[in-house]
Length: 465
Image 1 (cartoon, one colour):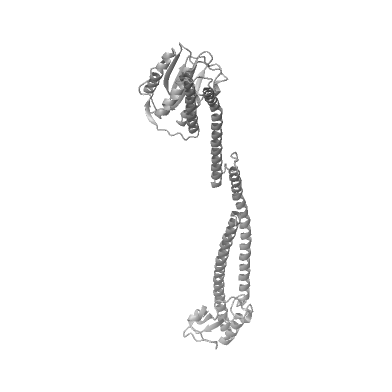
Image 2: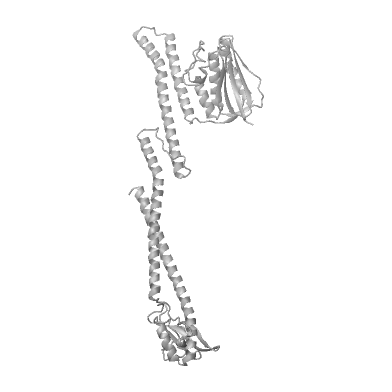
């Protein structure tokens, strides 16, 4: 049984049980209320009969005559004129007496029957009323016999009430089931969309999305979570494909160089010398760095790069990096300097990742700074509780059309060609890694440059107060 049938069956059972219970309770309440009403009517009629019995006894002085008249009233023969036309008798209860019930006159002193009717203990009286003449209770009019049965008219009315309750229950059940069916459709429609979306993802269509995530109920949250999951899977798949594509693209050249050199050595084209082995080693080293960079970049972009945030003084970190690059800068006749920074300026960052970001930016600046140029490291506090770290060079600058792309993988602007050495050479991933690492810290990156005026790269990190 599928979910639709299960919910429909459950809804039908619940509605049926609820309405049946309600109908039974209402029918019982209505019956009790009506019986109470009949009892009150009978009591009123008893009091009227007692008054008319007193009038009849005053005229006839014969209890037998009064009892006969009461007997006729008990079987619905009331509404007759009293002797001498003193008023209309209201002995009929509308057929409200049971078959074994009767009106009986009793002596108020000893409880004996006054007109030869069967005697009955007061405990067997259903109800009674005093027969008073000239202010004295001369008799007691009592209703004896079956107290539970109703007359034909009352029974007909109760039957009609029961039918009305049953009909109302049926109409209410139908109405509830129609509304339930509409609600069921409203619930199951988004579930079926989500089911179709899951099936599409299972088939490999990671672009599948479902409508309904704008709803503010559980189904809306389920749809939103499904769309978020599908987006995450699609993003991971794109990252995987990009990594495979990047590896295939970038590994091809060094592998070809290694293969060509080794083949030449095997064929005797090149002599087996240290220079040739150094060439092969350099290409192998480039492969190792390329694979390592691609792995870190993929981890950072996927949000899976572990970070150990610590309190780091910016001044000390920049001085350390400047000292690290100063020998290479000296060989290239490039000056590297750190602008004065407040000792209290600090950031929350992973030390290894901060070192990596600065290494990549300084290496990028060194690659594009000609001999006699300069590289400057600086930092400043931003109003939004962040610290901006800047690396500036005096290179040829970057064209405006290249600026939006400098942080992309393997992108190299066409106007920044400077000879590279083994220490500063890169595979075109350095700036992309800086961007990914900065974003992993919750920061951002940027660049300012004009052709012929050098370039300033920066990244923001959260300040440590």
